Image (cartoon, rainbow, N blue to C red; front, side, top):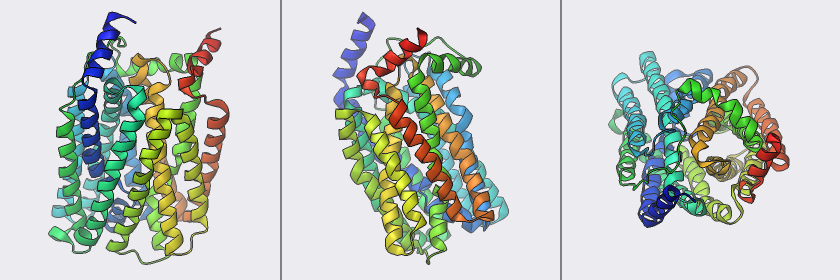
Length: 429
């Protein structure tokens, strides 16, 4: 081990307790605000109320995700050569949060007009752009300050705390803000609350103690970062397969805006019911995130990815046969468990799939794959819902996720066994 690496490890250990507390507090506050805003209940219903069209709901979510498709690579090029990355992480985190506030103000002052809907979509798109950049920075920062043996604990408890807070606030938001139309637009009032909460989380993140990186990549432009991808895939075939699994497994994002709209065709959905379903979604994900983290610290994130992807697929199958409030509530229990665990596993496993200096590049391309699906998926889902119906969307998701699960089980090794390096060496030979 070089002296620079030894100094970095000593710094991480010295400040580990502080950084764990910061990560937990930031996760609780920051994720709570974003989860309320992006929940597959409130925002789709709000967008439908503004537009009256499933297709436009899908278009809005596609544009939000579209903002995240190209910008992760920009984020990687911004920080790949830096020995410290906290400051740019804070800047782009602030830009993300401002978009939530602007969406809320649009609702208050422009109402349900066509201009209001177009303006909301604009700010959602900008939010996606900044989120693509900040996501790479945030994951890279976490990888710097939290050692791999503690990431399961930190990720699990971050999600647990955020989920518990969000579940409580979701019920309150549905039954009070929306049901009583606070400020004349209950959704806008709820989004203002989300902005305040997530801004507090960003303030906590600024207290991070970040070490200087022992090794970094040479400075690259975004174009040069793209050109580095073929070599990355060629020398790390296990990561290339993981990349494919991430893309195919995340196809379920295509269906997420339409879960609640499909439910509305089966029963009346009040503001209180929106709060109940969102609370179920949050609570189940919350209750299991700590378990996923504990399993990952002992056995690695691959097994968590397998279990949660299987559950996500099963949830879509179950939704095909849902015919009442009980089965709908059961669906939100399973989907909350699956999506939360899948995202936790994917975001952490990518950090282990190769060398430390390549983390920003791996995170960027992995996020791009997921966000590309998130971009095209909701729009495609809107077209399918308009022409064929909601059930066809869920069938498409089932097929692609089964393929992803097969590739994951048969062709992606557990990175902590050293198999990643072995496969890369074989490819070079």
